[in-house]
Image (cartoon, rainbow, N blue to C red; front, side, top):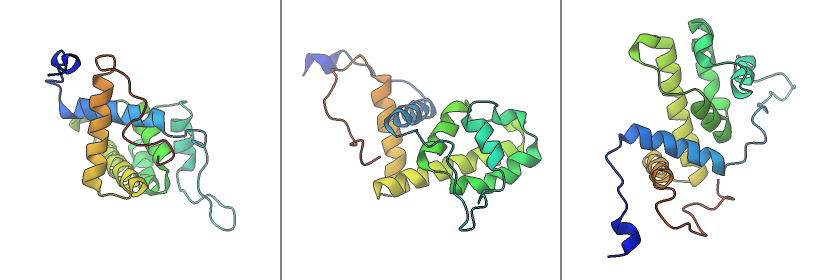
Length: 162
């Protein structure tokens, strides 16, 4: 056996913790220059109903939990208009998934955020949602093992694919 791998322990870590690390690692790999650029209608009017909410979230001015449930519910439909970079940034900066005590609006928003993020990643990879979820776990496992393994010149996905 290779002595480098003989010393590495991977678990036990909950899958969700590995997945969160994967989202953070993937966020570092994608271009985040246009986080505050949002889609517009052909006549120039904003396409998103709650664009200002996303502007505040993505600029780091506020947390999702500070918004009223009605605003969070209204913003949920706008998630489908965000880019992969924006979805990864939102997920990374808003902490952990809300608990059941956080309310249904927050939980529904978070579930839609997760779904939209995986769908965008799958589309970018031109693969299924299952493969996209595996990619997040692989990135998370790699992040968890950082420092324990020798660095590699090449990684799972080339930057121009993301």
